[in-house]
Image (cartoon, rainbow over all chains, first blue to last red):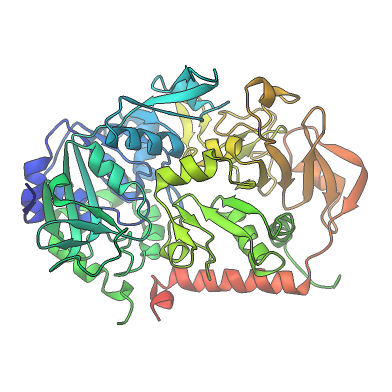
Length: 285
Length: 264
């Protein structure tokens, strides 16, 4: 049954060395606070799954926590490259990194298959692509009815998924809205799910009946971390900190600068520091 | 009109915007395609449906998004769906008329590489990869490509097939069982290109104002073919230029302002 926990405890109870972990959120609602807590606790040998690794995986890879990444877009969205991930792939620094690369369609289908309890996903994809030749997990099957050759990829079944959401109610049900991305599938595909939220409200009684709500029994732990997805954003709460994404390009370009930034902004900080980082990004009420 | 001054990049964006129709359903790649699609929406195609891979359908942003998932895309959209639904029902389901892509590396058959420079397993440069593009390139009814010309970008042979265009040319798509048209238009900062009906090799059909054949040849890594009847691309109109420049000014202010401009 779901527990409301301080983030430090929620991460310690649900993440282990060597786990396959997904920290999801498609540009929106990226669980940065949870990723930073995982960095502070120093987990090693993780297999990190994320469609768009974004800054959080650049940081975790740069800190040497990952042995493998599974992804479909390894960029800093709208800015360019992820330079710590590049350094790991091109130079093995700070450690060699195994890569399993897909397309967005492939990952989205694989998460959905994971949520559906299927061993694999079948879809029309990867036709004519180089990925199909370098990734042994991209195979094909023939439709038993029409004979059409379709792509098949294994479903994604993380040990643990971390997501950020707008609200929990007092019972621990979770509301996600806006660009809902792959949050629901990533939670339902995982053995355990940890959710950070902007706030807790009494109940969801007045909400539209079709909003995306994850029932409390699908979640292991909830931590209240206002601003917890900065520099990503939380629809209805604060805007994306595009300037921080631009700044990251410079920070991550240099190994020493990166270490100094991580020390000052992650290692020596806590989940409580996130609220202050989004103050200037909130809309006036 | 002809006295308006404009940059090659502005000409590229505007020429690309003109290729879009009011009734198109366009899957928008980030960067140059995003600017072109929104200029089209703000000028001759007000009802165009713009779709970004974050799940936003029928979006009408006031500023260009930095990422494909900026909040404004959702706030101005007709609806926002989950990412699996985006790729399964809307793209794979055959509901996209135009997939609009940019490219880091492109060959003459419209094959795109945004994955690696060098060998995949020992890359010289690891690029971001495909994201949504591999399936946009094969599931959209047709694709448009836009990029600024350089010898490094437009090459005889790409290092990696991120998104399949016409492959080796001719009927290569059909041979792979791909029944969509693939790349039908390439808009660069110097020219408009269309595939040869048989070989599928991109051929220059229109030069932008003031551009010479030599300039096109010098900034392209393959041997350029020109159509027999070569057009000149009409120069940007005052409305097109003003629309693009205003959009870019609003975008710059919003992104540099750490969201302050948006919150104000």
